[in-house]
Image (cartoon, rainbow, N blue to C red; front, side):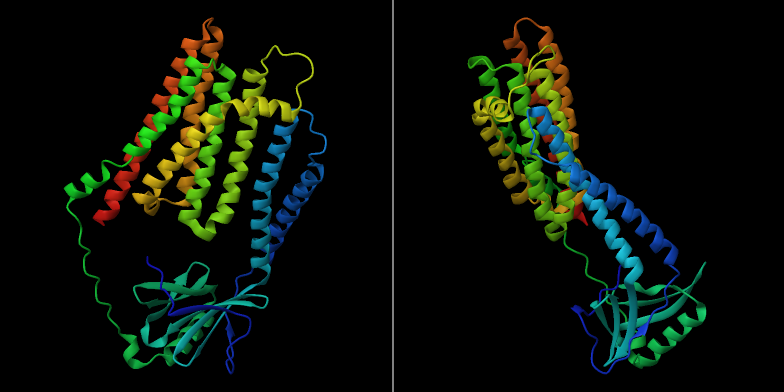
Length: 404
């Protein structure tokens, strides 16, 4: 059911002069408020305890750094929950709704303290103002434009009847029966043309993807790259995927991308920290390594600096896909924040399962160079499969969107 859109919305700190707002009845929410407030206190307390224990002053090696980063991302993600619970507690304790009719307008407001959010409806456009029975009382509803909305929450029947009578008394006679002309059916392009436009999508980014993956292949064949360098490189590609995912969330969600991006950064960052620790301890240092681990700066520079050409190529490759597919071909129009947050896991999990099991096979072989080359080629095939599947799904969504 479509939602009735107000004629105008605004934010204010005072009511209009000369009006007396009528506060809408509230359901008993004292118990729910206390429960949510209690959960908020528990969550906030646990959050503060971890924050107090989180410090970066005594980091000796990569293991210490990754454990601190995991805790940092945990704090960020847990903090989102604390903020949500805090806002919900404030809403339950202080949120109020009210309405009044003045100057040919039905004004519906909600306030928390001094802050008011106000929606205005032209009384001439109101239709079918009514009381609908509910299992716990009654609801006041009305139609406006092409949708309808509920005024307030469930309330006693006498209260609902009085509110409906007050609104109907302010409605002009001609405003009670307004017919909305149906929208003309949108023109749709022939399916053949749409398919022709969508099919080439992803070709340029696929070429860039293969070209970027040829850099580590050349490193294995001609520069003597080791297994640990290949594993770290493709771990770093996951970080690049996360970077462009955040960029896509900004395009799709705009201001909503701030809370969604923080939540994504928290859980994906924690995953990346643990994953790097796993790769470092098994493939970089090795399970048989003894003695004291190298310092963080020495270890990370030794791991990442030799890989900068391949890292740059992968960053450019994913940037090409972002520009050509996501922006230029309009994939962002059919995407949601939820889908964007889930997409990296589908690709990263498949890619890293391929690499991890392939890495064990490489470790078991004596001649590493052919095995590493096969591993990189297998990764290219996996990437292309994921890329093609993603482009196909987006193309189908685009076709459906155009046919509506």
